[in-house]
Image (cartoon, rainbow, N blue to C red; front, side, top):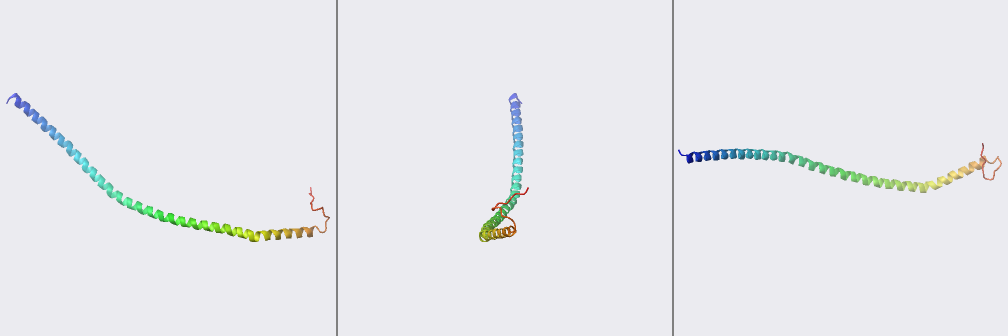
Amino acid sequence: MSLGDIAGMIAALAFAFLVFKLGSVIGKAGKILDETRVGLRTTTENVQPTLIKLTDTVSLTNEQLARVDGITTNVSAITTNASALTALFAATLGSPVVKVAAFTYGVRSALSGAGTKSTGGRRRRRG
């Protein structure tokens, strides 16, 4: 065995060691990729039912909002009708009631002041 053969054998062993280490690194990278794939599959399987439930929740929320919108519209109509009814009541009964109250006040004033001396429409202050 010559010196060149020993150098060739050392180079071959070094190359084999590097190939072995590189294979080990590639194997570990493959395992990492496999774990990543399994993790993504699990995540996908768990996310799909969640998205389906979320879609159902959004649709139920939209239905409830539509109902609330209908209720709000009805309350607005009732408020408008109550306002119109109040205005009608005030216009119909308000003026005659005020006139009757003024008339009865005048009659009471006339009857209670019939026996006393008139002060010219002005009342005296007691004090």
